[in-house]
Amino acid sequence: MQGIHLTILSRQCVLLEPGLSLDPAHPEQYADDIIAFLQKNQSKGLLYDLKNIALIDQTYYEWLKYLTTLCKLNNTQVIVIDMQPSAAFGLSCFINETPPFKTALNIETARQSFSQD
Amino acid sequence: MVRKKKMSTAELLIDNLKLNIGNITSLIESKGADAFGDDNLLSGEEIEDYSLEFLELFVGILHTQDLVSDKSNKESHEYKALISFFNNCSEEIQIRGGTMDLFVSYMHFLQTSLIEGLHDDTSMTMSQYREVLLMMASLFNDMTLNVFEIYLGEKEFTIKAQQEELLQTSTPITEIWDGVLTLPIIGSLDSSRTMVVMEKLLQKIESERSRMVVIDVTGVMTIDSQVAHHLIQMMRAVKLMGATPIITGIRPEIARALTNLNIDLGDVVTRATLSEGLKEAFRYLNVTVSTKD
Image (cartoon, helix red, strand yellow):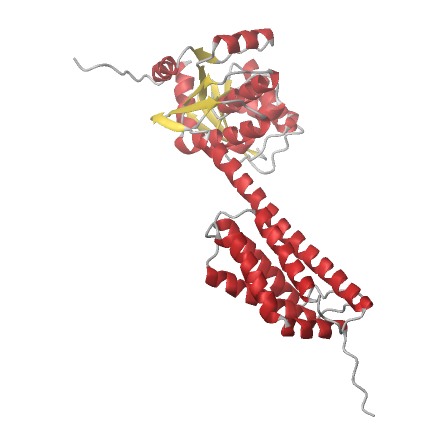
């Protein structure tokens, strides 16, 4: 899948690592492949790794919201992990709502939070 | 008949200074001793050295001065040396507790002493006197302005450094337990302070991998919509990092103000005191603190 790398972490948990070629302005092109992958693995959790994203703008935030809504329809919970301080700072400045996705410090805490739910 | 070459005004002035050097030096020294000696800002030897150095540099600058066009060569080494002399001198006086007023009045006195030294000189015409007076006024004005510019720059630098230090010390973020950060906020939160606090807090969350952040607002006396907005922004950023914020110590008047401002802290965990907040953080982390029987 171009622009996205998916790794199965456990039976029900998948890690999504966005690549440099990911185009958040056109989220539709990734929808079918992601849902197909999640359904194939019966994944209940999708961990979205943001460690390489220094700044989140409105377009990227909309992409994250789109992905969350999409996954929710598949009964998969999205947990955004490893958000950088600069990205959190910038995002908190322009959003006026609680984001629909959950957040966690890293994979371990995300998996803990996932298993608690 | 051998015709004597007509001397320029600058040359006449140099001659005059050379003739009266003794009187001028002792006058400058005595004024220097009055101004700086009483408070022990400069020793007698230093005053003497400074007076001689000034006269030497002043004579040096006369060699590069075109008095008729009143154009001083500001790029010349002599001009720069005189500026540097005044800057060093003023810096020294201030380091030793002297005031800028004192130094500037001393500069004025130097100018007056030089002018008074011309009093008995009959070799100068009225127009030459005028040239000398204009040149001195222009030169000393430049020097005074320069000294003031340096002084204001230093002051500004000091104020900025103090402000920065105050900001750093007013936001002590401490890891009070593994994964638990505490941030006591004292005073008010304006935009610039929020930025600094948030930046430090988010970096600390990342470096310490902290899961809980207890923000104590006991020291916040008043709150308006802007401060509340900044607080909510901070909570949101902490949550985005994957940590859980807990606000503690909301005073009754702050609680009332938040309600009046229609600010909803519904999705933020709040506790009455810092200790309650810490207990809540421990509960989240499944940490039990008990007394030893």
